[in-house]
Amino acid sequence: MVAAVTCGKIGRNIGRDAGRKGVRGLALMLVSALVGGCSTGSGSPLDNASAIEREFVIAAVTWDLNKDGNVTCDEWKQYVTSLFREADANHDGVLTREEYAALSRRDRLFETVGFKYFDANGDGRLTLSEMVDKPNPAFTLLDKNHDCVLSPDERVQSRGPAEDAPKDSGRPPPMGGPGGG
Image (tube, rainbow, N blue to C red; front, side):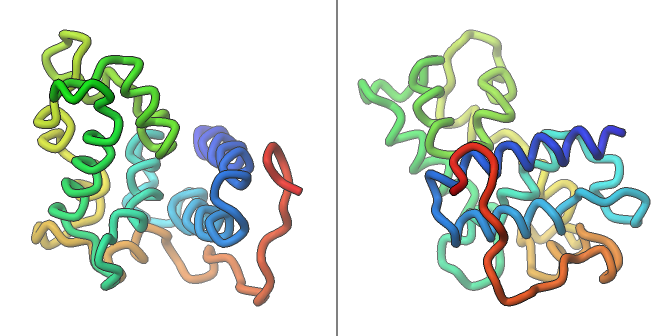
């Protein structure tokens, strides 16, 4: 039941994001969601993962800044740093809830995990340190050799048996839901 609720939420968010990211982005998000944890009982590291942990795993492919197939902790930190600096409207080195809301509109992951997830000291303000130093659940769940690199093999193991993977028809997935056409 939890998996159904989580997968339903992912599906709604994918539909909403379709308008912002286009067909290619939608296809990537849909495949990531399907192979990233919408199955149960497969022996996947995501079988017992929380919704927040699943969101981090699904988003991991977007942090591969150099597009080499590996996602590193440094790439995650660079990604967060870039978003933080763009969202820090008054350039004071701190994000307010309003500035964080702007950041979360750029990346749904931050909307899902919420401001409080990163606000380590509970002061209602986020520093860059609070955001980049917070352990990233994707690495905790998938980085089995603890080298701070999520290789394609480690990300594939999050999906379970091959029969759980969607079959590629060679066509983009149908559009639907909010933002779909």
